[in-house]
Length: 71
Image (cartoon, rainbow, N blue to C red):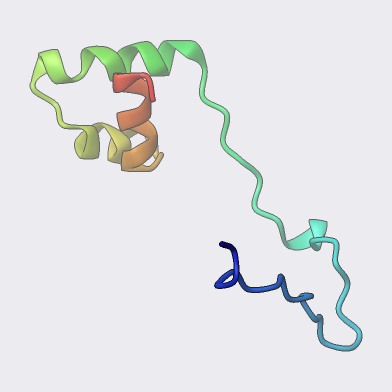
């Protein structure tokens, strides 16, 4: 009983737009060494929150949380 399923629409692009991302405007990812990730794991034991550690290191809070909890 798939009568309620909608057909997939074709995504239209504006004229002159390309389907590939513009590499010139892409923001490069920060790569953190394993030592920083190990410090993030030990930060809650020292009483430092994920938000506080992320401000010190310069990363996002969700990134630090993923390091600590292995997500």
